[in-house]
Length: 635
Image (cartoon, rainbow, N blue to C red; front, side, top):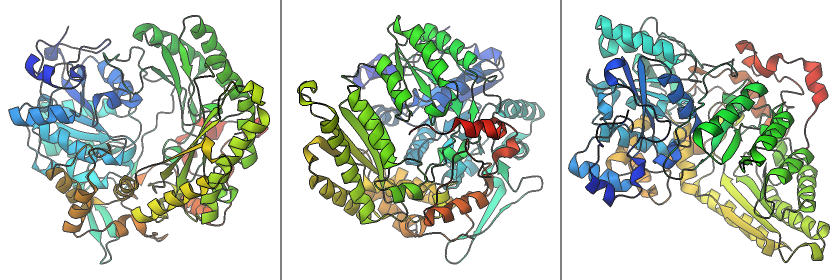
């Protein structure tokens, strides 16, 4: 079954870039008879189709929802700027891909929020759908707008735009939420009645039932529920049985090339490493591994059902998956003869990893990626990276011996306690890696190739639920000065011709920092920027820093308050009502340890008492002596 007609005419499709973004009917897309379902759910990624189609979370929820007979889940993405202009001009409502019907006809609009700079695109989606931007202005004819994803661990800057938020992993509570909706519909509870009852479900946050008050200095005085039965704290939802839950055996296959044009196999959730800047490493605790036999079965089925020619193992740290050697051997055996590529992101570069990559990659075309994050050992201890200079040089040396000649290095500038010496260390480490190539590879064996070291720096953004949530962030000018200083240091190195240096945009990093740790007052800023034509802010060609600065000033708010000041240990944060499993006391301990340059061992070596044992499973309950014997890999 396919949609009876397309929402866009042939004339429009011929005018716009990549019309295949909007026509639906891709391989494995699910089309149901709408008269046979009770709940219609539009699942939205507020960015262009190629980015949204690459997101695993939506694929999992799409598969789960459509496995239920009473639910039809469809997809919607932000229209690109060319179609956006036409839709406004011709008053064409935003539509779902599967049915080609308006989003406003749906019962729910679910928006996954992966990145703060997509916030204005959320308003684009609501606006084009004919849904009032502010939740309080929506009537019974509007879908329930629900947000999920990592950004909703501080939902406050966008709280005014959402009816409710789902905090945590989607596999656990959506069935209960949709059943509640069906009951409320039959009982005639109305929109607010449904939201009032939904607020009592685990993991659900309904902003309209909470009130915030502020001190004179702008910090939060109190954050309280306004109605009886509304929880003071919302605990995140966690799927503990990751081997027995939903996973898409038949993911949707796009007609056009997308960012992740491959089968994605999630091998585990969570990370043992405890890097102090990393939000995902805290949010997705505890570490839970998928069963290796389940992964083997799904890998074969997904490749068969999609025709993809590449499979990627997804995880925050693939090297820490305990059954990785067995899984790799299986995939190499199955994929090599079928000419299917295997992609292994998030590997630490040790002897095992290099051996694997030499088997699966054409080494003349590939590059190795390291993320030292900081240029000096002192600063790597501050951020708890668990990586020494010796580790990095040893890994690169092994790689050069194995035939690699291109290395990518990722660092951050503006980390807490950073000094000029730390920044100079970025240049010196890059130089030492280049020197190691010339020492290890004889001239005759280089084949005319020159070693390439691509050194990239991003700018540090403090995030909620990390030990660095108290840290001040650098200003735009400070970031640029740091990037120029780093470039100058690289230009002074003996092997500077072998080093290419790139750095990230400073202004978007500042606004990402503002929105990441902001409160409800920022909703007016986001709305003001959108009203002035701002969206696709995650794309540098469309981001307008002047509009953001101007609107912030008009609202009487400052980046200094939200981003650049260091926060007090007793300050109430906008996200303190959310319990992500990791306790604030643990994060405080780690913040203080960072300032005294102390490291914390990873979860396999020693439990640090972060608080997630309460979920009753995962790595927290592996035998400790067995875990300690495993030790750590080289990098």
